[in-house]
Image (cartoon, rainbow, N blue to C red; front, side):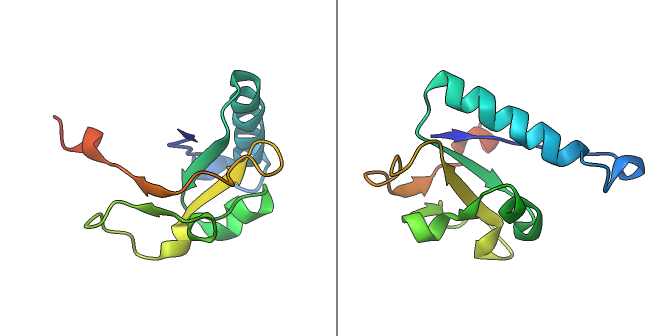
Length: 99
């Protein structure tokens, strides 16, 4: 699995398809590289539109103790049908603590 983040668009370009295009291009690249799935964090309303589902539905959760306002904010997507069937567990955020 790979974390596709951060994805940000300047407010002057909201609602012009910039964010969706960036995500779709990222998804294509991830598939080319052969990863089984993609994790994103953010607004579920946006990410659901481009095929992401709440990661908890797949048994994938943020590491305990990491603040997440809403569990639906962590989402994932299979890169091909059933590719996440054997994957479950926690996303580890140690990289944020190694400064």
